[in-house]
Length: 130
Image 1 (cartoon, rainbow, N blue to C red):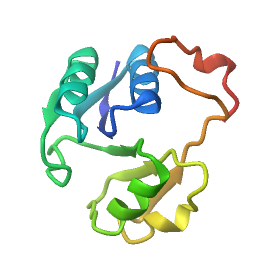
Image 2: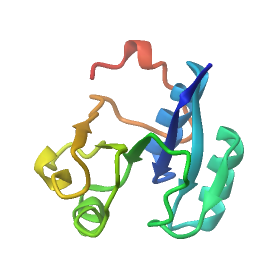
Image 3: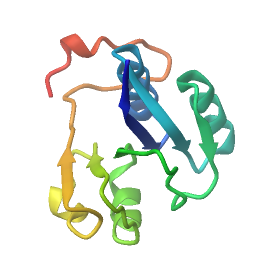
Image 4: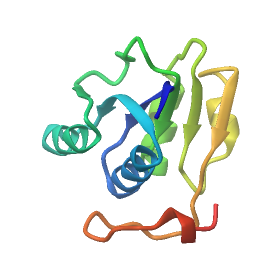
């Protein structure tokens, strides 16, 4: 288990669910999940065995990595208001440049899987080009 790497997942849609489950499967832990949909947020937090966070900006204390798994237009709206301290901040939006994260943290990245995701279909990330 990779206990020193705890992820705060922002977004409980198709990419968030699939990525979260895949990362959990290889040993990552989750400090929390935020979703605008409380029902989806609770469902994903239960699958990832972490808490549901009902305020986007309440970053759980034990977080090392923040993943924005949001639609492109929502990421653009949220990222400019978000401040992380020492956490690595990553987004998954295909049409949004990494520069959107420059004001959020010194440690930034983009993880864009070339795959369509569905909440009802299990994805093997071994077969997904990144």
